[in-house]
Image: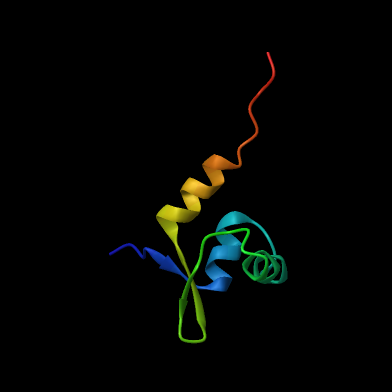
Length: 60
């Protein structure tokens, strides 16, 4: 079964940034996340959509 919700470590590895950068983005609400008590979780589907929304279009 594939995991849909990622922790901070797995999400940082998935998108290729450090955990510190990811914590800063969470602090400034620059990336979609879910709070479960004190835990921060990331919905893989929402992260993939967020990445698509932040893609830079190519120049022709």
